[in-house]
Length: 619
Ligand code: ZN
Ligand code: ZN
Image (cartoon, rainbow, N blue to C red):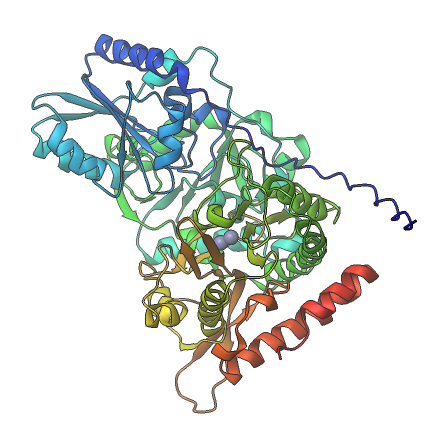
C-alpha cells in the first residue's frame, strides 16, 4: 500500500476590501432615464445635451453622486461622454471600453461611437441639426472642452449654451449625497515643507507671471499646498476642495464644514482662511474685480471662469501653478516613497512566491490573485487603499491594456499562460504602481522573445542619461527601439508621473510622444513598456523611477538620470539571455542584487529562499 499523502495545508483566506469585481450599474433603466432627460431638456427649451463622465474637479475617480454617465446609461467605464440629441444618443468611448459599453448599455436607446472612428466634435459637426440648441454642464466642462464644443457647434450652425442647473440631477431621484470624509493633516515629517513655505513659492510664481491670483480647482494641488489629505474619492486620499490663492495676502480654502474637526481647523488657521464651499462663487466674484486670475484651462470649470469675467476680472489661462512644484518631490517625500516601495516590494515578493506555487495547480483565478495580492499588502499594516483597481489578466485578458477583471470575465490561470499583474498601493508615506508579468508553466519561445524586447526597452530607459531640459517625448523612443526594430510597438505611453501619497497619475511630466515637459530632479515617473498580442497574451514590466542629477566627467552641461524605486523580482524564466547585451544582463543582475539585499531581510525564510533563487544572476 502506498503511503497516504500529507494533508494539504489549510487554504489561506484572501479578500479584497478596496476593489470589487461586480458590475454595479444596471443598463436596463437606461431607456426610461434617457426619456426623462429628454423631457427635462424640452421643458427647459434645450434641444440636446452633453453628459461628461466628470466631476467639477475633473477627477479620475469621482464620488457616486457624480456618476451621471453610469446612472443614465449603465456604462461604468472610467472615461466616456454622452451626447443626447432629439433622435439619437451617442456614447463616445475609447478602445478600452467599446466591448464593455456594448455589453452594458441598451443598444436601442444608445449608439456607441468608438473614439477611434470620430471625435464628439467631428460627430457634432455632422449630426447636430442646424439651429438646435446644445446644452453643456458648465460645472463639469473645462475651458478647453467648451472651446472645442463651441467650434463644432458653430460649424453645424447650432447654438451652444451652458445649463447651470444640472438637468441630470433634476431627474435623479435617489442621487447619493456628496462625500464628506474628514480632512486630516499630513505628518510634517512626510510633507517636508510647511504650508506657509509652499504658499510663498506659489505666490512667487503668480507674481512672476503677473497675475493677481489663482483659483486652484485640482484637489490634488490643494491637498499638496496645505499638507492635508481626505477620503472623498476612491484610491486617492483627496479632499474635494477649492482654493483661491492671491499673489499677495491670505489664501482661502473652500470645503464643506462637515469635513473639518476643530483641531484641523485650528491647525490650518495660521496659513489659510477656511470658508464653506457654498461661499466659493461669491468670494471668487469679489476677488476677481479688476484682477487677472489664473485658471487651469484643462481642469477649471467654465462656470467659475464666467464668474470671473462677469465680475470684471480676466481669466489668465495656463497651467495650475502648483502642478510643477508638486511634481518635484522634496527629500522627505522621496524618503517616504522609498519606504513605501520597500514595504510594497516585500508584500509583492511574498505574493510572487505564493503565486508560483498556487498557479501551478491550474485552478487559480484572476480574482483570487487580486485578493491574495491585496491581502499581502494589507498585512503590512499600513495599506490605506489600492492606488487603482488591479489589472489582473491571464492569457488573452493580459492583452487588453486596461483590463479590469469582473465575475463575468474572471479567467482561470492555465499552464502555458502569461499572467500580467499591474497594481499599486496607497500607504501613508507613499504611492506605488508596479507591473510584473509571470510565466505559468513553460513559456513559448515567442513569449520569451517578446518579454525580452520589452525588458530591453525598460532597461534602456532605466539606464538613460540625458541633458537637463530633455522631455519625456525624447526619452519615450528609448523604451520602444527594440520593439520597433522587430516591427512591433505598444499603444500607450511609456510612463506617467506619480504623486507622493497622492494620485498614481500625476502631471505635468510624462514619458510619451505627448510628453513636452522637461524632466526635473525629484520627479517620479513610471517606466512601463509593454507588448500585447491580441487574443494571446500581454506583457508589461513597470517600475517607478526617480529623476536625479548625474555627474558626468565631460563637464559643462548638467545631466540627469533615473534611480529605480520599485523593488521586486522580474521573472527570469521569461528572459532570453541570448538577446541581451552584457550591459543589459549586468543591469538585471545588479537590480536583482539590490532587491535581494533590501527586501531579503524582511521576508520569512520560505519566501526568502524563493526570492534568492528568483534574483540569482542570469546564466
Ligand atoms: Zn501600473
Ligand atoms: Zn503605471
